[in-house]
Length: 296
Figure 1 (cartoon, one colour):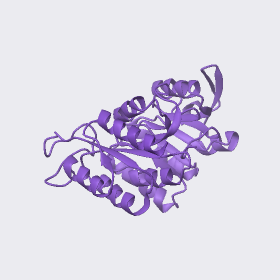
Figure 2 (tube, helix red, strand yellow):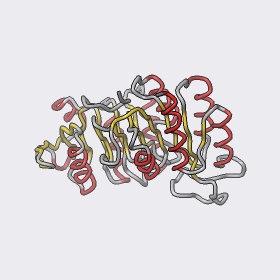
Figure 3 (cartoon, one colour):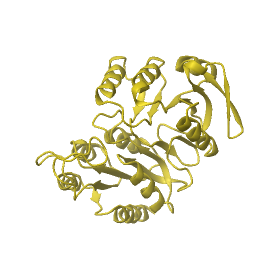
């Protein structure tokens, strides 16, 4: 099984005519995703051929949904236009919007997230500044390489794109139901807790791997949620044990302030909730493999 994205998902790409949009739409098609069109108001009515598939470029998300039945949008729009693109997707009530764009101003993210909440949360937002979501063998919405693993029983949620790829590769012998990269910005849509809840309900997910990093309290809140609501085995990894205080590391949200947000504090909170936490990504993968084997 899978969460949020499966073989029936119909995907459009906002910004499909740009270099990043067209490149990754081509890769999504090659991975088996059902990409059904794109959106660019300035090129509405044109067609674009990617991976041997002719796709219509629509003027709006609403029009694309009406004509194709799309239920997923992947957003490759430059930072200064990204807020309007996400608001358009929300107003069209597309069920899933995957915001790949990096460098969106925090107040713009706050604006479109507040807009989503105010309009009833009809659109699930993944990102921004994220690699997207993949259900191997079924569909791929974003920039996660599709050839590093296959379908299986592990569910992965991660703040880090590159650690998402590493974990998928390390556990390729088991495979994944879905891997979700939620992004590392200070404000994001879908959280660790959202993914944990979905994986808990997904009959095809047997072991959950959660990757966090320094900054904020998302991992501590996830630990509380796991303690109360998750019965499946969970393995964790927290990046940033050697990060200096007060310096942003990698992601805009990865900053330690005083005693809050440290990797050690997050590790301790997760372990107190019964989560096995690895010291390295490879050790984390081995812990997940051991838990999987115990179930079989």
